[in-house]
Length: 391
Length: 233
Ligand SMILES: Nc1ncnc2c1ncn2[C@@H]1O[C@H](COP(=O)(O)OP(=O)(O)OP(=O)(O)O)[C@@H](O)[C@H]1O
Ligand SMILES: [Mg+2]
Image (tube, rainbow over the protein chains, first blue to last red):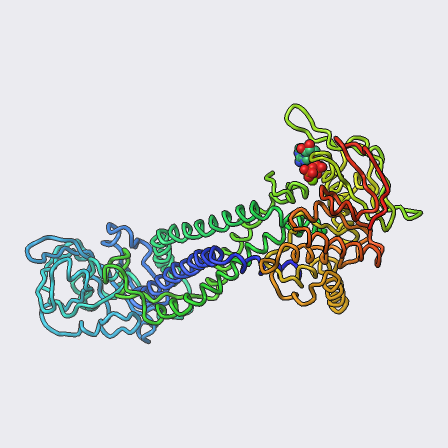
């Protein structure tokens, strides 16, 4: 108890300089948790949105389909295996058929993907019920980004041209039946959602599909020849990797802050060891071993981290809690500011693990930068220390 | 050590390297101190007084020769052993007091006992006793910055003697004090020496101190030039 008590007294005796250090350190505490919380929030939001709008409980895909390679789309279709069709009929899965197309918005030419989906499906949260309108024109559903990029409004007519299963070209007018908001770019950009039955007709692919989306929480079923299964985690891996990349920028910021705090402590330690040589000598004269003197100084530095955590908690908890509830307005307002289609505000998520990991990181850093200068004491001769002489 | 001998040095030499050359701070010092002595080391500046006190206090090691203190050979002690020897048996008093500024008077005096791991009740009694010996029982809660120099040195004395050490080493204890305070402090130390048999060894220039000691050892250029018994006061 002797050493901890002395350490606390010495720290508090440091006055303004000590509080300044504590505040700088607390800033890095809060900033790290803040940045990490944003990242987790982004990750969670993007993942949830992806599950809702695209991934569901996993996909069966026609083996030849590669989402990253549009050249595979033309031939990426096949008859839905009977067990999957049974699931679809029970409302536990939804079939999606992909057909590449060319569209002519306002006289321009642009390639797009027609995606046939059952208007009554409940697996994805896309508003597919808008596709029920019966007319000669195909009802089409597009995302807000797509709508903006090609300049389409609800009710607009769009010419669509595609190639059917036999390679014959055909064209039709589609009417924009609805525009939906989504955070998932891959169900939005370049995508035109149409009724599945109509698309199967148009493309001469009766009973065929490219993707069968399972409902959330569905057990991975058996395998079917010609079809590959990708589970939910697989489908989220890309989006997660993307989020992580996006947050490296903010990591650099907090590494900087932590270094700044570490430097402040390092500096304080070196200074105080230099200024307190006589005190060190006195402690040694009273019979304190070098090890214990080093322990005292290391503890002083580490206690600083502890107090910084308390200081940080005082303003950090209300601040972080406020943003967790109110959300954090993304710079630039909305949309693609993060390169991801996130909403107007992001809700940071602070997990216990995150706070604990941050605490461990900061404490370890502080202990190291406190200990390194303190090691100098071991080289200090008691007689020189008492004289106040530098080694 | 037997027959009341507390310290014995044998051909003690301390050489400080200084660039290419070296400085001989102590040259063949042979001295013996018995329990209960009240002795002063005098001599011109640079004659080796502080160097000798430091070696006897196990804060420094001799270059050659031997210094036996309380049965321990200083030259062979490990850091840890030397720290333990100082902790249990030796009290130090410094010219500049060297109190811990963040601690109160009480806590400063208590500190060596905490290092010794003395139980609380015993500790409280010992601190109260030590503070009453130096006449500061009423200033327990003050911080060193609130005390005069004389009072600080009295706290330092209390801190040095609170564990009832066999040996107290004091390097210029009165150099920063006025005549009245010096006198008061020497009185206190004489009383402790008489009542508890604590051995006191001073290094000093101060005539007032020299008037109180019962043995005066004069060092010149690191050698014992004179070793005389005085009547004392
Ligand atoms: N750490 C050191 N390195 C080199 N030389 C030293 C060191 N400490 C002391 N000396 C030298 O050793 C000699 C004795 O010094 P010491 O401090 O023991 O003298 P002193 O009698 O206490 O003097 P003063 O009365 O001025 O305090 C001096 O010449 C001094 O310069
Ligand atoms: Mg000296």
